[in-house]
Image 1 (cartoon, rainbow over the protein chains, first blue to last red):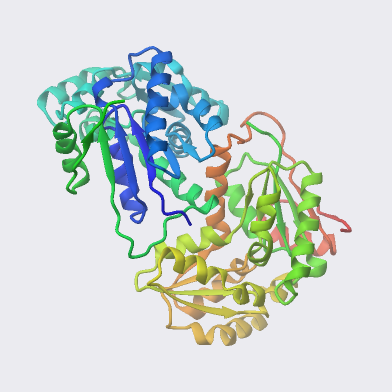
Image 2: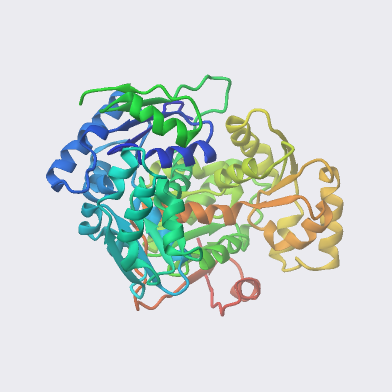
Length: 264
Length: 264
């Protein structure tokens, strides 16, 4: 057993979609979250910079004595997950493999779509992982650079969001039966995305899938938190306005959030 | 990617219930199976002997160049899993933690039953794992020493089996809403067990639960087998009669099996 918290990193608030699923599936675990909203979105940045930022977030989480780190960010996973995982002596989980595996299981007609940031799509990592496991599947990728800014500015339900999602996803409609939400911000736009894609298209939430993996790794490494009377104290950090972070976090997680702004 | 096979060990044929689930969930993986039917059941043996036998099975699987080892045997998991896992540099998975976790999720009234061999029950490991995660749950254990011999002699559907299961499980009936089949042989008796316990009782198949964990670890360690045109060749070994093994294996797995008898 290991009562230390689990660390989550993201370029902003998107990783909260993974935290929400964690709180549902593993309610006894404690969370430390760091969202780099000041420098979001990561997607359009060069990979050397994303790598540097990701290491800053990782080191911050290590300073909080976490037992496991979750890259709750597809862009950071695509660029830096393998490198960080090799360096650390605690488990490090990304969101891409769980999402790719779930999509392979979900598709019936063999046509899988992937939407993500510019960097995630450019890295081609989802296609590679899917086709390595299942070479016969057809994979169609689409960068959606406008989605993260919508979510970070808490406009996920606005009419602007509807218009942007509709126009961006047009080339994907009727092309796939399964769509990977290859960015942890996108589940916040899920109702609109489902509506545009059609109700029969299966949306794969890479972050939610990743929580299943967290559960298995906690078992495998025997680092579950005891379900005791120990009080739990989740900690949320942002590199931008804590008020803006709290607004989004509270409406998404349905619990009171008091985040702290930090400098990296 | 890693195209080497996954190794399974068991005291006999019970681990085939895990293999069946693997073939369903991960049809691209290749299997090497060793069942120690000559020395089954392990349950009544002293732990020093179980430890020694388990190491012999582990070393046999290592000689077959496996990439991951599954203890498809609760008794071996209870006695030797932690030790073997520490020693090897490939992942080693047991069936107890996955089973305990699944039962915690499944129970509604907080009363969980565990049936297993004498050694598994004596080790008290299921109760410990369940109560470490959920101290408030009530756990009731029952050794069923007659079940493994029934399965090993291919009598799982006989009227003798019905009588033995009915008489053995009596003290457990109406006491729990969730029952862990804490021995990989027991799913072969599942219809009878379900009948005796009542249709509303949730039976947890520790072996099937463990396959979910295998899938996650293959992803985590990036050792999935490529879904290529590579032909697949499962290998089955037994320490007793290969004919007897094949009879049970074929009826359970629904594929032709040609096992080989080996000496350890």
